[in-house]
Amino acid sequence: MKLYKLIPGMILLSLVSCNTGQIKSLEKNITDKELQIQDLQEQVEYHQLTNSSLLDRLADLSVINKNDAESIKNSLIGLNTQFDYITSLSDEIKQKDSLNTVLANQLKSSLIDINDNDIQIEVKGSAVYVSLSDNMLFKSASATINKSAYSVLEKVARILNDNSELNVLVEGHTDNVPIANNNYKDNWDLSVIRATSVVRLLQETFSVAPERLTAAGKADYNPKNENKTVEGRRHNRRTEIIITPKLDQFFELLSAKELMS
Image (cartoon, rainbow, N blue to C red):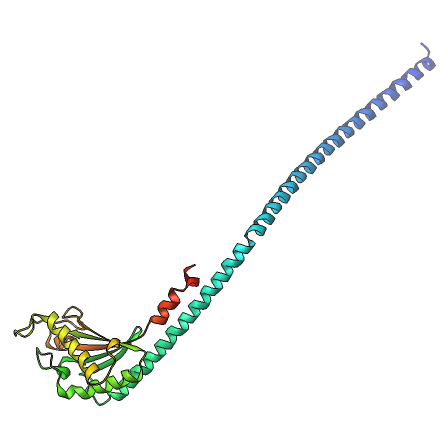
């Protein structure tokens, strides 16, 4: 066969081979693009769903805020009201604490000439405690007040009468030694009658309003010291005048409707 007759065929095969490679390359590119398009479509669909969900949640939040805004507002108003009442109560307590300190100082100044072993004055909690020794007030195992103690109780009464907003609790205390006479049944009896004697003297002799006075006996069940020694028993035999501010305004604040809501 002549060579010039083979050349056209060879050229044709070469062209076909080239076109096949290009076609495959183009087909691959098309496939890649289709995959990219599919991936982008999936991403678009995902974001559309996400946005739709967010819009739904925002709508829900809008409804919640609309429905509950008034309730939240009222709750905040209530909390502010309660805070104002608590602040007011705190101010009242501070005022009473300050009053108690002044009162204790007045009592100490008034009774400065009394032996420290016979009288002690201190502020405990919201009250002023005036502790009077058994030796100063009474004879042994007796509820009759010594005349020498009148001046002390008169000074206490004068301060009580100058501060009419104060209440007064008188407590009688004994040691744990049983009563050795027939005048009183037991230490309970003695402690109560001693407290009553002091209350009666404050009312009848020194004009302290009786509605401000309370008498109570604790017998030997609230000792200041152990009853094992003579000194300890001496401290336990005492009468305490406990002076407290009237708490009516505190209870009124605590029972206010705004605090109960």
